[in-house]
Image 1 (cartoon, rainbow, N blue to C red):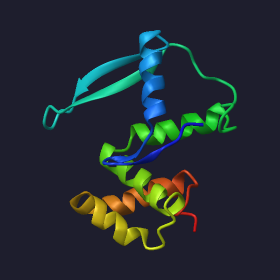
Image 2: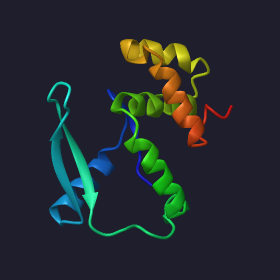
Image 3: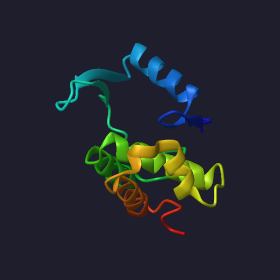
Length: 133
């Protein structure tokens, strides 16, 4: 239900960012800052106290499907997630036919070493376009 726009690291929603901040303030979720082992760069992990069992009213996905997707996300690097989100955005929102070239233009070195292929494989595992096309 949130609107998104293309941003430096892929799709971004100011509405979602605001909702997350509100959820942190009202203690519906926690934010925990951690640091990458390789270079010490900080990142944030969000945790919810309550389980979201049942069906997501926005996407109509069961909690099992959502849990499966989250498990895949947990085992995927941030760069692969960024590339997958960007591939999907280029294909589905911007309707870029040659999204491979556009991805390379926008993300450059991040696509190297097969990361673009891994991102496309993640989309395929999640049954998301353009991996299904």
